[in-house]
Image (tube, rainbow, N blue to C red; front, side, top):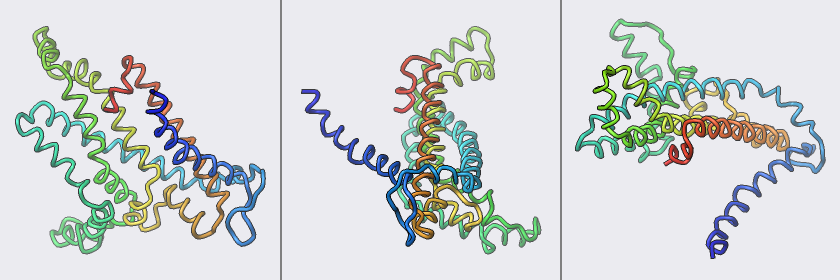
Length: 278
């Protein structure tokens, strides 16, 4: 009975996850045909060229990590206030966090193109006499800002869930035993909310690694991410085997990160990784 019920999930997994990965691996072992595309073969030559895309890898990991850390620094205080001070308005405030997801990522990012452009915030700073000739668009700052703005809700929600599940009596007991607010937070609240932090970091950092739109619009093509490199390899140079090799290496990197996540989560408490993803 259970096998019959699980069959659709197995078929879905094989067709839409396992099969594309196998095709990607096979293509990465081939050669580029003279007219572009894929030519059957069996070689690791494409993997030997991964170093030529090191800048894309480095930009993706570096700016993705910075954006994730900034998301965490902004999201944790917001989630803490929602969970501990939201009261009867908690649901409404939480809905407002999700509201940006109701609009297109493209529209939200285009709004920042205008705000960071010469007619936006730089013009306002110039008119106020604060700064002259400030350049915000097409910079790493703009890309990080776009990452934080678009992915912040994905960081807030799991942290909020972890904080909201903490029994208030535990905090009160800590205070009754003489611990101050800072010590209570560091010894009680922060460790118990760690599953939400780990889940939030994973939910933000992994999608950012494959981000394409934000670097294009806010980076102006000058901030090159791995997603941009893949688009160029598949659609412009039509070097499908090399593009497949880069994508395969990217997937391997993601799997390593997920492995670190599971290891860190399992050290917190048995079943933490499952709890943190709820």
